[in-house]
Length: 498
Image 1 (cartoon, rainbow, N blue to C red):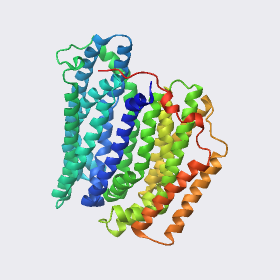
Image 2: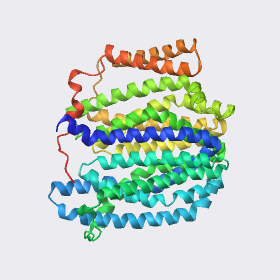
Image 3: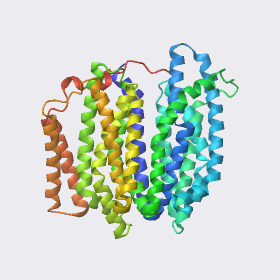
């Protein structure tokens, strides 16, 4: 496959994932300034359960469909693709419709159990979106099975843009009433999912695989469940941990502190992690079964990740106050101080999240999804224990500590397995050069901080860190010559036309 073909097939989805993360971050910053810390707490409290329900109903569908469709195409089973898709559609309709009804029924008791019954209305508003998310995953999975990433990429970005525009507009217009403002932002989520569904549905019109009259394939439900159940169980671990965490934090710290943590600090520190997510999206389809080239790819991806999250961690640690003053000026002093502390202490967590993400992507590419699942289960259990133990003493900061514990354990499990299967190559002197890079960028910020303050400090510090990073890449041996084209040489399949 040519370089341009590789970029078009796989990097397009990676770029879209990055754009989704960035737009999501941009959205939450002004939203937080409109509804405040308390409003963000109510807004964020509904998403752990919402994410869990989406996971249980439709998260495994794209992977299932893309795998089955790809297999049938390779084996010339084009006629049965439509029959299998018809079965998947019936499954999605039934499961998602039931989930919508269940969420309507449990909305009030769940909001009350989480510590703030005002979340009842947002739960009701977001419930219908479950159905549209499920239907959208159906179309995305089929298109991805044909290696057409464009539909998935465009629909995800479109979804975020609609949420951004509609959400901020409704929240601003309804800002005089906190619950209505938050509900308006939540309504934008439902509207964005409807728009995304209409887009993928339009793209699928006229294609035989989506014909309404096609009968379901015999025995396809068994095949569906064989694919979906293990993946659904695996994907449910993280949302379940987040739901339990939200209950513990809101009950102990209140919705305002939870909103500052989940809605603000995680949004800010998640921006550089989005780059790693995009890198991981490219790594997964590029891996095979652990050959020599694959381990060279792992090493290169890991080094790239270390540079990105390392420099980001330095910036968050030294510039947390300036970031908060610039982006969340509408918050009161106590909220700004707490948010600044959350971002500062999240520096180590950012570093660990990046390593966890890239190693998890690597293991998925190697066909070993059980390894990161084990790491997540162990790390998640320890995270909840840490929060339960420390929340009374450290308050919402215990959540940051818990995140660090989870990602440290998960990364350690991933790395142990990867290293046991092959050698991760790091150029001679990389560790020393990497530490020098972190120290140099830290000193640069400290020196600038001694001379100026405020927004100019933030801008000059970002430029200084970028210069240090570029200098590190130029002077130190980070990538070998043979590694430059590695990403493009790993995939040989040509894009199939739908």
